[in-house]
Length: 365
Ligand SMILES: [Mg+2]
Image (cartoon, rainbow, N blue to C red; front, side, top):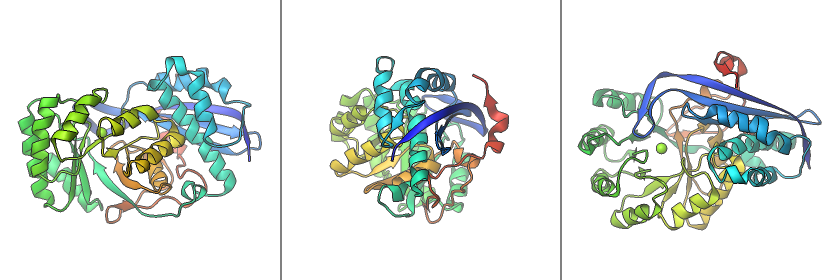
């Protein structure tokens, strides 16, 4: 089965958050950027892919899809859902090798998968030979700006909603404040509930080592992005220093960045994000890479899409339930039950936008 794309519609939305969210490196988030790419085939099948950012960079991504990549998509014969990604990466390689290009290619790749799965009449997991199953999830708070009291009440409310695993932000100016918050959260959760921390890359190796020792005492499942993701040799040193597993993925935008993170940096929990690793094709590559190393694959962000993808791999890990609620603007409600979520069973990638809910946030670019 091959397809030919006849039209492309790219949209940019600035979607406000219900409250200001803060993390250590990026600071204040007031909204997130959502960039959608809707493709229609010559026989009228429509597929929508998308990517997102923390509120910066959306104009460039939307423009790259609309202006630079359009000619490599329209009227091109596509035989397999995986093939266009590589062609697009090659076409813009000189200004890409990751970065904005990875976000742009991801949106197109996801749209292509939406078309192929719809034409096959199967949800993504079935298209890839798997069955529908509940996926383990955890709540990923962007909560560094919360007072300790608000942090604890936020976690309590997420547990009431059905979560049984929680990740908090760390990376305060004084790491002793992080330790105090971590201890309070562990006390609230009890020792058996899964608990992770995420430093968003702000520690140096020395601080990361101190925090690893604290995390060991508090039975932390993983430390996410303790340091700059390019400093892969420090990851290696940290992994050899401590028993606490390391996690990383949202800032790795090529296959080889993930490969080096696993093979050199000794990352135990790869967390690719289909919105910036080359879409579903890129996500599946990292899942396969993880499997070859005896690891599970987890995910970062866009839970409404990843729930179907984690059902479509042999080695599903933990799906992050991210604090950017893209799922609020789609038609399939994610229901959290006993710390798991089950994907949509309709043909396609499992994500259908409710454009009416987004219309007030559309931005010209
Ligand atoms: Mg993170």
